[in-house]
Length: 76
Length: 219
Image (cartoon, each protein chain N blue to C red):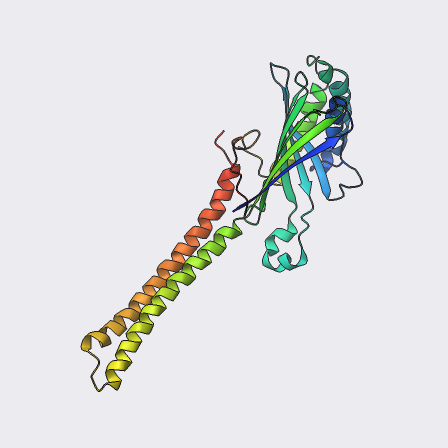
């Protein structure tokens, strides 16, 4: 997949590879410590956050997991 | 007005396979409309949960007939955020996904819970809820309000008109009051129409703002 920042795609893919390995082999098996991907992630984030600002994608100030767990179940 | 969806699916794979696949599912033959994918936040919490935020852009495929109505929307892709919590100790994952632009037209939100299937622990089930809302419903309510207000003022004019002409036909001079009232009614009708238009605009604006507020919380 491509990144939203064209210049970031390679960095994204490198990070993804590292993450996917760590996720399956370490994290899911209960070993969440020692993430070996932090440097790759930092580089990737620097690039992609810049691209997001440039494209004015409105991701700022949005609460994690959105608003409230209790949603009205109205359907009409 | 919100449309609500509730559904359940089963994947015949174990929870750890599904959770790993979750991060690798794009691209696939069914995701041609997904244009970009980025992790924009990620952290491991002290209690060993993985929090992530993924930004997706998707092609905005709308039916032809909407293109003329929503010209501005056609040009732009849809931006979607997907927040997730992976809890390997409890073997569950929760996701909340929502669109963050084109809010005036439509907002789609989805919440999923992934867990081990109750029938077979080598399977994974997904409980999915979604909410689809559109502030256009707010606009149509506003139009109705305006129409009703204008209708009411027209009824008043109709009745005054009747009284006036009946008086004339019966050889009476329409009372001065009626003539003056006619002028007043004209003015009043203009005022009412203006007030109704303002109210309609306000309702439509509120409906649109409400959509935006529902997505933006104070952090």
